[in-house]
Length: 286
Ligand code: NAD
Image 1 (spheres, helix red, strand yellow):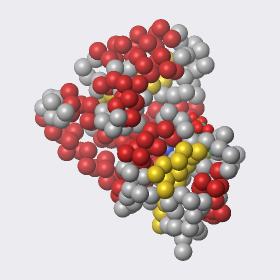
Image 2 (cartoon, protein in one colour; image 1 turned 90 degrees about the vertical axis):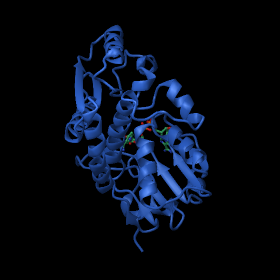
Image 3 (tube, protein in one colour; image 1 turned 180 degrees about the horizontal axis):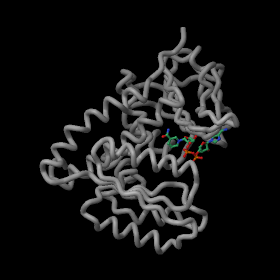
């Protein structure tokens, strides 16, 4: 029997509707949640991501400030801009669109964002808090995956979970979050010797490699829940994930499509984190 898709677009819509009351309550207290998005250079994919984030803010009633800097901007200029935003009371969340041009030290740039405005959850202080199970901001993509699992009634507790990918943005925080929810977690990566032997025993498989359609149905345990974080654009211009949807849906019990799966949830959790930051500033939550 074919797997039931987990519809990220529909869940994202429902969650964003729920944000309205919170934004209204903040407005009544004189606070409009504000997100600053910094983009350096003209990478076309990054421009699309930034536009989507700015549009999502506008639709949800958030203030958004898009700051576009030329590709040859010096690191000091970007750092100075971040310091200004750190001190700007209208701004509750700061996001630096990655990747930055090669002459930037990405770590130094992300470290410059004030931890209480770090809505991406990439600052080492926030990563440390996440490791200790007391996250201030959960990184948006793995947070979106957790919310999808919750919505689909999938409880990770006691399950064999396999995460393919160990990036700071997706794989590592995903593994931490699933561990905190009592899954038994294995992290696989490009140097894993026998990937299939791990995927074949996964009750829950999260794939974030950037390798189009690399996970195929024959690599799955029957009935597995499959979360595809990948976003790849094929030669035909169409989007596809890191999972081969057609073969995997024949074996899995639940599966996320691409597009329409994790992608819309990532932006939704960015809005959520920005609203949370504003609620903290307004003293509505701790
Ligand atoms: P990354 O390049 O930083 O990391 C990729 C990881 O995959 C690495 O840890 C690497 O070891 C592992 N890997 C690569 N090839 C592998 C292989 N053959 N076998 C096993 N492991 C392998 O990428 P990332 O930033 O984590 O992103 C991963 C994917 O998720 C990309 O397609 C990206 O576009 C997508 N992404 C989507 C969202 C979203 O909102 N849906 C957000 C972030 C990233």
